[in-house]
Length: 284
Image 1 (cartoon, helix red, strand yellow):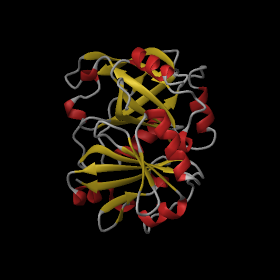
Image 2 (spheres, helix red, strand yellow):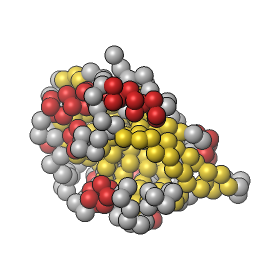
Image 3 (cartoon, one colour):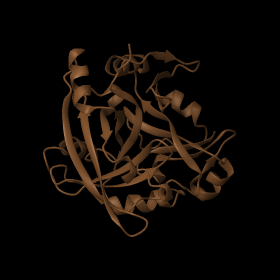
Image 4 (cartoon, helix red, strand yellow):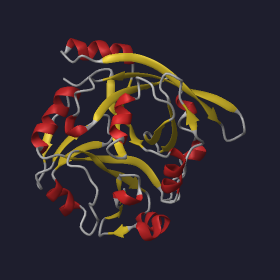
């Protein structure tokens, strides 16, 4: 039985050390970047978003040290990259109760917001209510939480959804681990979605709701999936890659430029060019 209050992947959080420089690097890959946002003071963080049809990528930086961002600071002491992934929560308070009823010590809900500059020059506020799985539950090294959007119109702004690389959705989150089956089983226990062993030995756990899949795989399998792409600097465990659906692979290759490794079915950017995230653009 799947969870009732939590559906598929909502957004991937890419933790970065220099927020403005990171926005510039992702902009150079053909993404439209939102204006910079500043979260509520107890979070101590700021962000830029890269918005797709139903999901998005968040570039997150620490602006002030707070207890809330201690895990992010610990992550950034080691590397930049995908630090956590959010699911969409229908009701965060009910979601916490649902997980606790299953023996998972969920935390929350926590409310916060950030001001939003609108394309017409006006101002709005994006407001959220989030819940967290226990911080020590990290399948494949990835923290997970769920986000209830109280003001979706302040996030999914139409002018921010048009990208030169024609990106329109998250398809997969690729997770490096020495034991894909064990990591997949842990994710299955946490989100109540089945794990499936694929032909190349990778393990897929669907996030639900026709959203992005989690793919757990070892380094050798990752290398086979991305021939010719440098894997230098990737961690032994953790989220290392995002597969992004695009309308036009040729447009993606053109937008990315010299950073692209063009394969038969995808255009890939090594992690060194995208703040620790290997990005693959797949035509859909």
